[in-house]
Image 1 (cartoon, rainbow, N blue to C red):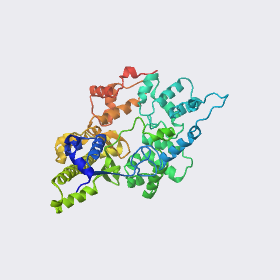
Image 2: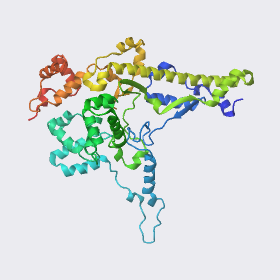
Image 3: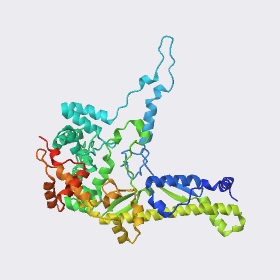
Image 4: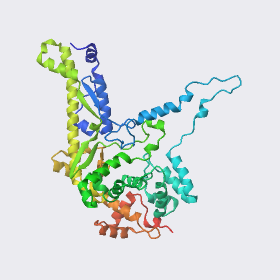
Length: 473
């Protein structure tokens, strides 16, 4: 017979049981939506259990090495920060009794104002810059994201202060020389380069790491170590040593390590994008992996598996009510776990196919992005177009270089020329900006045959003003 708790679940109102979900519905969910549904099902279905895999104690990301590549924390970081918090307040736990002539003690008098990384950077910057340069520098500091990266466009900053892009970039370089190392980088590659140049001890490994990150970052992030070794004239073993050194000693998010200790007890307010699937290279082979299965997996509860087997073998031993209970919840549990497996396989299969089509983009950058439509993917894979749409809708993919982007990126045929236009304009002389016609000519030299009005449309989409408004004295 079933336990009293199971019998009570059998008698609950059917409306409390979540509606059984289909594969198409599961496929359409992104990682956050899927997690919410799984939590709801776990709360209602006793035939399901959740197995949690190792994760970072601070931010919850999968912990695959000594340093978390999401927040920069190390094992035991949460315990250390909690202990630090306990020590910091140990003097204030026991209220001090006021003497006859003492004023009443105010606990708020020991509370200091919040001091964050931007405050620290402004102090360092004030020693190095003055006047308008300091004003520009403080603006750049305020523009840093929670990870310490500068993701805005220098053209916009130059327009704001009526400066040239090289002048703004010079101020940014001053900020990049501040502590912590790697701060104000514009991408992961620049962040690692800044840290390697300021390594406390320059060894053969750090020198080789600097060469690899500077000259062969694409294939290095793609784990194509043989290609890196051939390009730089080093051994594959040395490239692997550099990879271990970078993972163990460099911080991909330099600002995270500066966070005040009590902030480590709660997630950051603005979390970075959470990928649904990741792409990586294993040698020359491209591999796609569904990310949510790194941190958890669902399994059927052992007790219900035994009951299900027993009811099939000795059906007469159990009442109709008990059999209905087990059949209901086991059916729902199996349907969900099967849908999750099918979702994972479909998502990884679709992502891998798209990644193979856009392999040059993954290795060499946005200029190599090929025009692609979801209809083309569905026809080539033999899947319905709606399946491709569901598999990519509101989802994000982590590229081999660590960046996270929307699946829509792969289907934006204009991204590649947009990126080239952005770079051409960023390198133009401020006193003599290029017209749309001149940009079109340079685009032609780069292999893009675009009309002047198409250039103007893409330039507007990038938020870049026309030539007359970009001219600087």
